[in-house]
Amino acid sequence: MRLVFVARNQALRLGSAVTRGADFADEVIVISLGEDDEQKKMVEDAGGIFVIHEGEPHAPDLARTLEKLNLPESENTVAIGLDKDWKLKSLPRHIALSRSRHDIYIAFKHRSDNLRIKQIPDEKQAITIASYSYQDAAISVCAFTPKGLSALALADVVDKPADLPKELSVRIIELDAAPVRKELESLTSASRFAQLFYWMLESKHPLIVLGIPGIIFFTVGYQMASALIDVGGPHDTVSIGVALTAFAVTFIGVLSLVSGLVLYILGKQIDKVQLGYQ
Image (cartoon, helix red, strand yellow):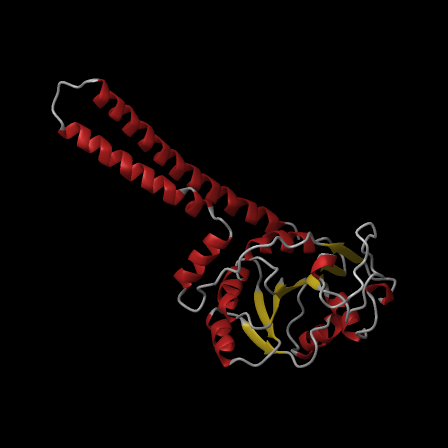
């Protein structure tokens, strides 16, 4: 599988995106909508291919840019618009959704996030293959087979997915509206460890959410227990209460650590299962 990120002014996120994408795809390509030597170095250091796209970022134009690379044919290509609305933790879900045996699969942004048009479709109106032209479409994720890529490269920007050859299997969906949130700054320009740590924070990784509190609780409980052992008898109700509290805090810490490890292992297994659906 080939994974493509389409990015503009996303230098802080490219490193982590390429690193994470390499876990799912045989090849990761970044199509940049502007020249940037720093981005190119970052992508290539992470093991990706950096390509500059000249012109508007419409689906047919991007498809033609991919075809001009003359890369080896890939059974499935997934293209993702790397912008402020897309989250790194959504990558496994979008890759799984794109493997639906369609020649072209398009996930539009929610109509409220489409800044390309002024006439937003009514909420009661379903999004179909005839809803948007490519120049008016805000596409978040697009996947295609070699046949679908060739057909898309032949299309015009004023065409709609409904104008594609009838023999192609085309699926269109609309994503949920992006939640309002504060912008998070990535640490991808630092090191691979920083990229991994940023991804764990961004995806609310169980080793962070449960592991760090577990270490804190375990350490506090251990210190309390050690201090209690150093105190000679006789022990009264207060010391017994402290002992029970120390045991509870230590137990919570161990439970959090174990839960974090179990959820981490389950997450790895789920990713393998999703990648198994070809």
